[in-house]
Length: 386
Image (cartoon, rainbow, N blue to C red; front, side, top):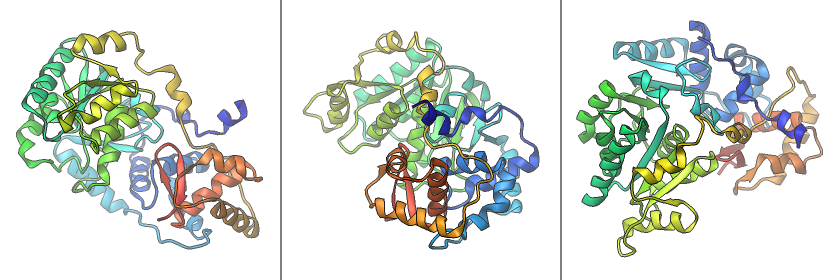
């Protein structure tokens, strides 16, 4: 078990530092490269030492895949332009290792390598709680969300949410005075829904707006789960107010549980479909709350970052400068492919099943992902590309 811990990617090894302008551009380019996701990003950085070195060798890595896949990497000029556009609106792109990156967000399974931030950075110095729920929320639900956000804000907590209609909007409005964080699914410049423009402007003045996607990105359905993991990751706990059976708020609650955060739920009438999700969470063990005191009684003794969060990091460490012959590489890749299906399975299970070293398996997984043969899923799981 101790050996397994040592093999995992150690995000704590990324020292807090201000990146040089060149390396910051490299971080942004690598983080925007397709098909590289956050976990792969950090595995590559830890294996090759820097984003710049990774970008140099990345084309060679992809050629090792059984099926070659063309990489899409933004140019230096494209990234420089994006940074300039951020500076024009007094926003910035912050890398994982830089001082302004939220400390608590570093301890989720797949933290964004870079984020765009717009507004008052001091908001991040306080502990946060997330409030999310139905877009078609009832009037009572919206009133409760706003009051809860106001009361929690008065007790010193920031409120994080997703700027959506309904509960999210009410939570942001209730927390404007004390500070609120809006996490967007698209680019930091894309306000969705458009009716929340005035609220967006107020949050930019009094709170903070965060986005993982590049400027100009229009949110798509697949982007919202990624946003939800950040909302949960920024917070000590997530509060669910009205959530239907298939609500995205339940996805946020699941991320919160995976990340070791608290989950709270406001009960509702069983006759209201919007109460299904919250009531279900309570049945499954979420804390039932009726006011801010119920929340604070649970979280007031929590440290800024739970000690066990650091043990939840997934992914694995590499030995640097590994080199295997082509025949062995293809043998390992094919062995892994034979184990996989379109149903996700944990990376740890694959490693246990293989008779190769952990370093060999992880490098093979990297190459298969970059070659477009496999895809990653939340919770350090992988599957064949569907």
